[in-house]
Image: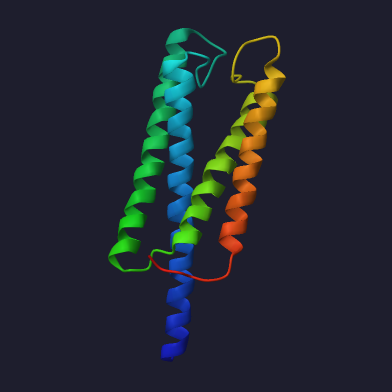
Length: 156
């Protein structure tokens, strides 16, 4: 394998690492914010609301652990990219938005509406909350894709 092919393979590898680092961090960040704001501070719902409050609290703990591990995994990849001077700002932030938006859209459509394991809030006009939740998610996904597809690999 010649040097040009090696550089091309390394570049593609680092592009993917930037995306995965951003996706994991974004997913963990949005899940953390959801857990902290809606579960713990506002008490709007638990991750699993189809059982007792104790089961809801256990499900929140497992959900929080999941978000923590995703965030840490994303930050380990981020630290490695920074050490190697291969952190690509726009690709990483695009991954953050894509990961966070995808998680939020999955939560808003699959978990809230199809599986019905919880709702954002238990009020008469929950549709208002659902629309806002999912529009924000779609905007994050679209902005993430635009940033990922943007030309230029400016390293930070």
